[in-house]
Amino acid sequence: MPDNGEVIISIRNLSRKFNSVTAVDDVDLDVIAGEFLTLLGPSGSGKTTVLRMIAGFEKPDSGTISLAGKDVSQLPPYERDVNTVFQDYALFPHMSVAENIEYGLRVKGVSKVERRAASEKALEQVRLSGYGDRKPNQLSGGQRQRVALARAIINRPSVLLLDEPLGALDLKLREQMQIELKELQKELGITFIFVTHDQEEALTMSDRIAIFNKGKIEQIASPQEIYERPRTSFVSEFVGKINKITVGGEEINIRPEFVTIFRTESTAVSQLKGRVKDVIFSGAVTRYLVEADRNPMIIANNAHDSIEVGDQVSISWAKDKEFLVK
Image (cartoon, rainbow, N blue to C red; front, top):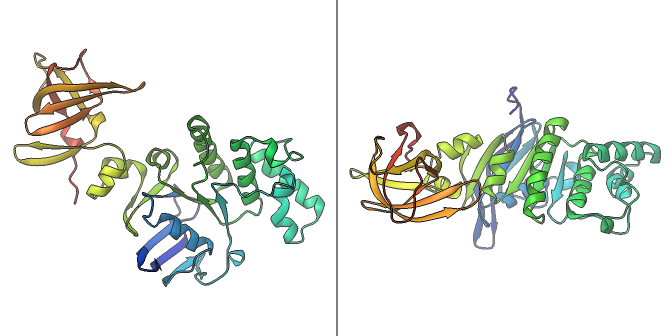
């Protein structure tokens, strides 16, 4: 995350209703220039509505949005120094790739020579050099997404808004594009505001994550802090898996990867003893479901022995990985 701390977008008391439904409820948010900020939450949590209000596609019922110190709350999209990338790409099918990328510059009256030079540079940045003469229907989904990105960055906006841009891609391509997007953002130095409901995607790409729930921001912090020190029960359960373990009448919270299980005859110090109810193999991780005392199911991702269903086991975890939530 950038060290200078300059605020590029400042949102204060932002609210938006649709009929009787409050989509965004008195939200405050500062976005740091040059950061990759992700708005994360379930469907209907308000994240996309906030993005659309920043873009100018929705007007707030109350509150303000300032861009580089200027109140843009009531300005149309074309008067804001932001560009938006959508999940459906929104490319013109009758235009070539280069023509799609150059469209915004053409509207501004930039010469053909300058437009072509700029589009070639943008294609190079999104790793599509030589694709300028093709039509969108000749490209794969990932390539069309790169074209949409090139079209958005060619104007060098202060802020790039990305509305679930990887949602239509298959898993492998989506993971590849996550890395490429993060690298592109670092290369360009443009502020990215990225909307997703995918927790892993947010953790992978972001400098900071704002967790939305019922129109409000529950927590905004680095991915590591969000994951290891969630402030609320909603954040702890929405981002990753969580164990709520009762020990001595006290409930503690801990992530499965910080829980280790041993056979009961092990000499390791344990906090609980139990029985393995199920073992789930998912490639990189083997997950153990354990019944222990009054805890119907404890998930452990780490085992120090060869353990099978029905085995009696001891469970331990590092105390410094426990956390409390509201």
